[in-house]
Image (cartoon, rainbow, N blue to C red):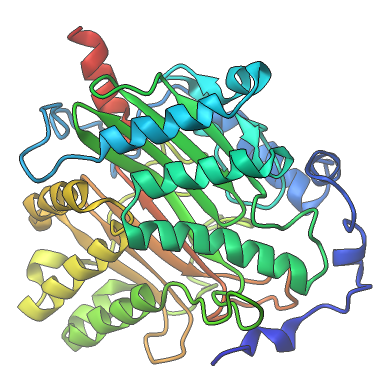
Length: 413
């Protein structure tokens, strides 16, 4: 229902809003980092994790080798590298010397792992876009447009627009705006050698690497509170309706016994959950920011055991998560997913009737896709609502950030 979120608006003089109104990102970071506060405790828990040596997410702690051989892109599966290189070089040309120094990192730099999705700035990696001139901001959007599918660009930029819209609604434009994001480049833009870019901030985090015509777009975090814009020049923009509907369709296509097996917890905060299963920041998400090496056991029902219609719906669901990839890399990614369909699992938390809130995860050796309905952050509700959505996409067993490919390239050059 459009505009449903408006019944949960804080009064503009409420401390949740008034206490941060007017703060710039760096001043807000100091406030948010104070120990003993909700955000400060989150930062204290997350901050040490990014320095841990990267291995990759696994289901049992054992890293599987050979999942990601670095071979040149198959015909028809090539990434738009020429366009990406041109857009990245245009961006670099628009920066001054200090900007070029700040934005640049080595292709295997640990700073890849500093991305985060909250609105407060934990790591000031690269350049903060809201402090850049309009020309640089537009060059960054051009790099996204050159790298992503048209629908992927619309979705990513849409999350940035929703962020700005939320800032207008709650009158926090210095904390929430269209350009409350950091951009970083890793490696030198090159038609063959590995390089990539990273954009991250509130409800939008993208990590993109290309090498030898191949592309990895992972980790990806996309979310929205609310998941629509219902006023102003971008009115009508909505997000995640397809991912929500397809999840419900998968559950409807299962047998009753399989729905019971897929549903690992009946309630979003279930008494049967072990301690820590609902994280204060991530809630039910397991593969979010700073979880690069997490062990995530498979749960639910094996996709290969589902009725054929349900199996096809799971594939359609994964395809929505990888839709930000351009056509060629998307085809390569879905081929990879299909090759591991016998090792793919689907799990669910919550209800599965229209309008219910829920969490689901598709997990295999080569993909993790999660969707979760969340509690309020800048709106006033303490139980998950349908209009606050978080989604996460990962490449397990070591190829987040294209790390497996980069390592192969370095070892063989």
